Amino acid sequence: MERFLIETSHRKQDCGKLAQGLHTQDVFSQFDWACAGGMHTGWAIVEANSETEARLKVPRLVGGQARVVKISELDVSRMHAAFPCWW
Image 1: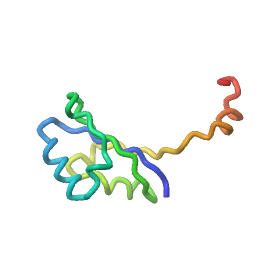
Image 2: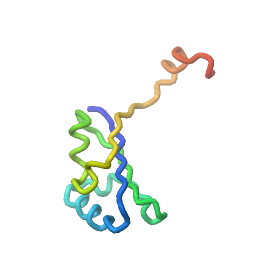
Image 3: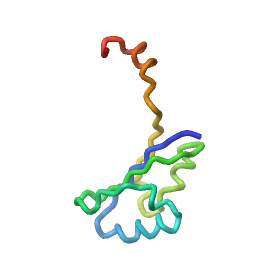
Image 4: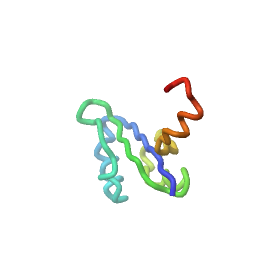
């Protein structure tokens, strides 16, 4: 399995619908939200076999705007070999 960062921005008036959609999909608790701070965006790190599979965790309401990015842990030894000038 691979890891993906999902970013879902939405309009203030869509908060309730989005929360309901994520709750129905049982993924609401996987997201961290900035709505209370005035930035109507949620972020989640999910495991999936592909970007397409990760996108299935995004409700249709924001599916077109959601960003899904493959992520990985940083391997410091490989980074040191690739970019010795940083160290």
